[in-house]
Length: 151
Image (cartoon, rainbow, N blue to C red):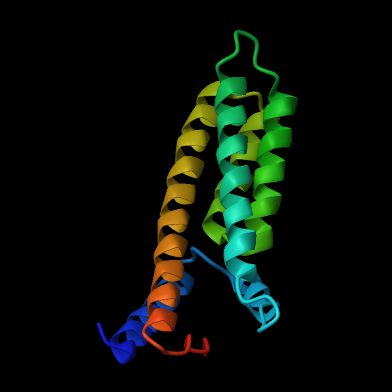
């Protein structure tokens, strides 16, 4: 595929993820921190987010399966996940965590289990979109092009 087509696809994807609320301005701020001295900054930060997220989601799931659920511990995990989601601009994940924390406060196990599934779904969606975005960036660079500047 030629560079112009890849760049067009990249810009369309960026536009879509913002319009659909997957990412917010924090992701733009993250991208502004990337420069020639650290060209993989965003990929590295987001990769760490992915690693931490997998652990946190597993911890939440395990905590919710205990005979006596420690809702304070579940809330602490969800709070941590909300913060890390916010730091990379994963807006829909952050919002889902906010709703989840309300159920933790109410000690509502059914609500927590439903929210866990919702958070997992939102996380999986944003992860796929970011992985595709990074793949497009690699293809653009490999084809000799420049990553388009996000308007």
